[in-house]
Every structure is written in structure tokens, then in C-alpha cells.
Length: 328
Ligand SMILES: NC(=O)c1ccc[n+]([C@@H]2O[C@H](COP(=O)([O-])OP(=O)(O)OC[C@H]3O[C@@H](n4cnc5c(N)ncnc54)[C@H](OP(=O)(O)O)[C@@H]3O)[C@@H](O)[C@H]2O)c1
Image (tube, rainbow, N blue to C red):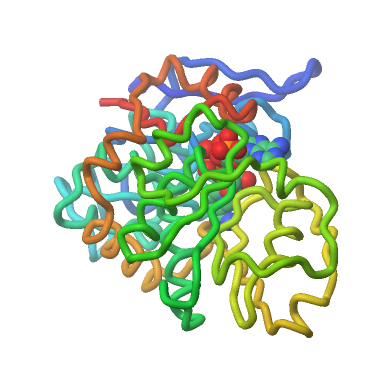
């Protein structure tokens, strides 16, 4: 019997349980590529899966973890051979397909992208799904035609994973970045990533008015709810907000006024099912544009045995930046 170590979520009469244990190779799901997972990460959605606070896990037992980097062990997929370094974000791993918090994963080769030149596996997971999503948001704003000369860019959930990477990417592209955070003690950290101005997230968390003073041309929002509504009401004429998260709530108590009176756009960002060409573009941009010193400043490293506690901490807003899970 061949086994490997994995974090496993199970469902019993008393609800969801999670433990680090041995998992049998024969219980892996179908896939044409087997990967030795070397690194993963803890995203907000992983916190939801690990704690059961939202129905992220759709099959039991489940190995949670929505993204990994690793080395191909076996493959019948034409694009991948043993020894290739690969990364995977989303596509339902850790939700419907056995995921990343394990020494081994078997997945569809179509879900994999090659580790971009210039990034190590650890750096790729320091970026993780949060950072890749931040890149998708920046690409969406650029495709909308927005440029730094149009005005500042606002980033909410600034000290979190998506927020930290978004600040670094926008600052590098020349934007003046306004960072909204509930952690004023992280002001130096956020300025180090490239934020020009820090605002208290309370300014954006009360119910929004239909329109308010125009403050930014663009935004990356991880928070949703009243925060997103306020962002929209304060967006300049023909600006846009890229919405990617719900850390503050799933609702959007907003008005049509920003859309019909200021031509503001709300750009939806999904990383899970994003097409491969867009993933390749995002990863190649990350490898090119993300400052490695800033990436190192936002990342900390844990082992598989610390994943469950970190999942709880991220939901409590206690994790700064990005957490790499070192597996190999
Ligand atoms: N669309 C997609 O494909 C996609 C992909 C990745 C992530 N996401 C979503 O994006 C969001 C951020 O993910 P992440 O991994 O970056 O999580 P994270 O590291 O926990 O960052 C979220 C940040 O939001 C702020 N926040 C937390 N609770 C809040 C509240 N109640 N009200 C206002 N602000 C709050 C905190 O920032 P401050 O302490 O600085 O205020 C926190 O650090 C999550 O909702 C996640 O599910 C979506």
C-alpha cells in the first residue's frame, strides 16, 4: 500500500472535521498528470474550506487547497513530461477535485500551466491564487483602457493577499495607489509595497450614497458589500472597479447612478475557470512585473501541519500578505 501525507476534510454526523493524515494513492481521483506537490498557499477560500464556514468543499473526503506548484511525476498528457515544473490555480481543486495540501496530486493536464521562467515554485505560491487574481484585475482595468494618468487607483483589503499584490503591481505600472485597510499599524508595510496614501476602511464600510465626490479612476476590491458600493460611488467619470472578493460580504447594496451618470464600469474577476491563454498572460506578467523584494516582504512560510490554524487566522483578518505552504 502506497501512501502520502495530506490534510483531509471529512464530514460526519457532528459536521466537518479536518486532520493531517496518510492518504492512499489508490484513492486519488482521475487525471492524466500526477504531480509531486512542493508548495501551496493559504488563500481566503482555503480558510472557508478548512473551517467549513462556507460550502466550498463539495465532495468528502476532500484534500483542500486551491493551488499548488510542483514537479510532474507521471504524465500521459502531450504537453507535460516527468520533471516538468508546473503550477495550478483553481479549476475546482480543493472543492470538487482532490486538492493541494498533500504531497501528491493527480489532475487534468489541461489545468496546469508551466512554472514561468524566472519564478521559483516557492515564489509562484507566494503569489498564489490571490496574486494571480490581482494580476487578472489589473489586466481587466488596462483592457478597459485605464491608465495611471486617468487618476489614482484604490485597493481594498489592502493588507491581505490580493490587496498586497495588487498594490505592488499597480505601483510598478505607475499608478498612485490609495490603500484601504482596517490595520493602520500596517501603514509602513503598505507604503513599502508602493501605496501612496493609506485610508481607514471604515471610510468605505458605511452604506453608500448613490454618488459621492470622485476620488479614483480605478480600483481592485477584495471586500464587496458596502465597500464596493462606496468604491463605485466615488469612481471618476468613465472609471472602473475590478471586483474580485467578498471578505466583507456577498451583497452589493448599490445604485445605478455611477453607471448611468458617470459611465462607471464594474468588472467581474474570476480566477477559477479563467481560460488558459489569460492564465498564461497573467503568469508571464507576474514573472516580469512583480518586484521580488516586495514579494519576499509580503510572504511568510509554514508547513502542512500549520495549514488548519492559518485557515482560521485568514478568516479573522489576521494574516498579512501571503502565506506559502512548504510541502516537499
Ligand atoms: N474572484 C476570484 O477568483 C478570487 C480569487 C482569489 C481571491 N478571491 C477573494 O478575494 C478576497 C481576498 O482574498 P485573499 O486571499 O486576499 O484574502 P485575505 O488575505 O484574507 O485578504 C482579505 C482582506 O480583506 C480585508 N477584510 C477582511 N475582512 C473584512 C471585513 N469584514 N470588512 C472589510 N475588509 C475586510 C482585510 O484587509 P485589511 O486588514 O487591510 O483591511 C483582509 O486582509 C476573498 O473574498 C477571496 O475569496 C477571489
